[in-house]
Image (cartoon, rainbow, N blue to C red; front, side):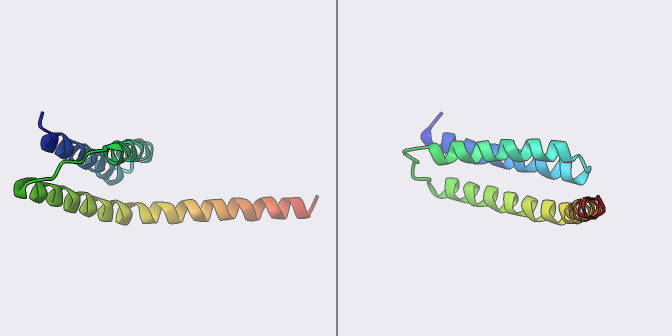
Length: 107
């Protein structure tokens, strides 16, 4: 494997994890979303750990750019899909906190 193809493979692994995150979000599989997000973070950490990143040729730069755009598109859709879920979770948590405070006040 050439240094360029190895570098692009790291970007591809990030894209695969982002695609798994999107699939999980579309199907409301929140535990799977969290697991895929963890995998994505690990892929990003491995990419950052590369010491001597090779210079990409024009085709490599285009592929990298396409991958990044795809990941950003997935991220935008994931955010759109998770916002209602996060708002519900926030409401549940704030209700639980309010209930606990009320319970403590009347002890």
